[in-house]
Image (cartoon, rainbow, N blue to C red; front, side, top):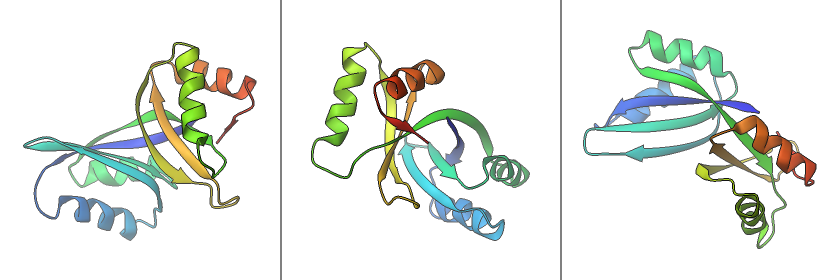
Length: 134
């Protein structure tokens, strides 16, 4: 299980760049990210090299943020790999709240970062079915 930094940010020009600049200046590498927006605010979800430090730096800069447990599931880089994972989850009646892509720098394989209601339980189920959790 990994921890994701969720940042609540105003939907204004340059906001995402300010967040990435703050992380850059703090020596924190962004390993995966996704943004969701609304008219005024959005959520920037990030998997980073040092989530605790990222949270501390972002809070210090006035951003509202929190750490959230998510799963990183390594997949083979081939047609149908994501579909097989989602079918496995559907067959076990597990709902995925959201997901996004990262990759394992050591193996070069894709990693699907996903959030579910019970991260630990879902991790156990997937590992027991042969998936590799990061």
